[in-house]
Image 1 (cartoon, rainbow over the protein chains, first blue to last red):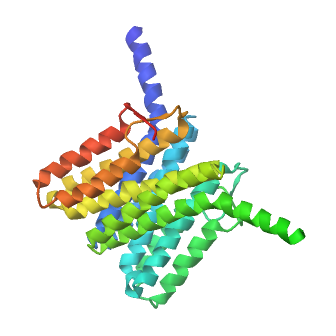
Image 2 (image 1 turned 30 degrees about the horizontal axis):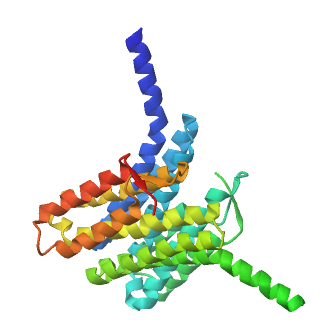
Image 3 (image 1 turned 45 degrees about the horizontal axis):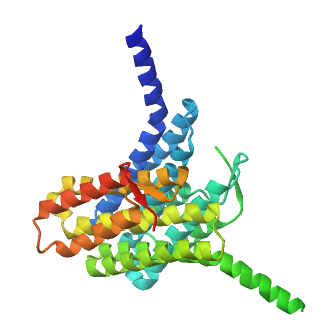
Length: 179
Length: 179
């Protein structure tokens, strides 16, 4: 009986931590994608940002499923998102194409990261009523990441335009219904 | 009179935003340092992480001076810190020396970022009583950044040790008095 109770407690604790473990996987994969971008392996960077997005989707689902939403988890989620969907995609698109524009290209990448941070900070202090205000950073980061596949087909300056539009959509005040 | 009142209101609003502007400067400088690291300009990376640390020091002072501490500012501060003192120093030391160890070096850099995020998330949900629990990420990030100056003088494996010790100190539970 004692063993069973102990096992039950352990399983409960583990369930409570599943969402946070998925969040840390999201962060680890985002950091790994940046290291691949650093070595100019952009396809690997794209792959790991994509898997990070899957983990991000799952952590929210796990937190709701196991009723383990916590303030700590929420904070960790934002910190992971700025790395995986702010810094990583901005560096990927910088290495893929924006670097051709020198300092101007770097400024566009930095603006994307700054707008992502403003979006996340605003989201954390706002009450949620079934909708997001502004484009979520996960969506903006994934679109920017996948836009790098279009580099051979579009003019280089189009990517400055795409980066800026996504950055502005994150800090804009339009509403998106939560899915 | 109307003009003076209007001016007074504007000055008050600006004062309220000074801390957030300094925080965004911290973030922008951290992102810039990462772009320099990406181009293997490690000395420039070190310089911009250092200026980011100065901005980080000033934003807290400005928020207290102008009594403009806000939940939004606190969130923005953490998001900036994970970029400037988590991701940027980890990538800098990776490019300076840890890359020699291949995947193992990458794992050490990623662990530093993950421990930094845990430290920041924990700090945001804990009550502050005049001390920090664990080494603050700003200190850990700056020490790791400056340790890169020792690369010509120390064995390469020492930097795996330094990275891991700093990561563990961030998530440890010892107390540091606030300055």
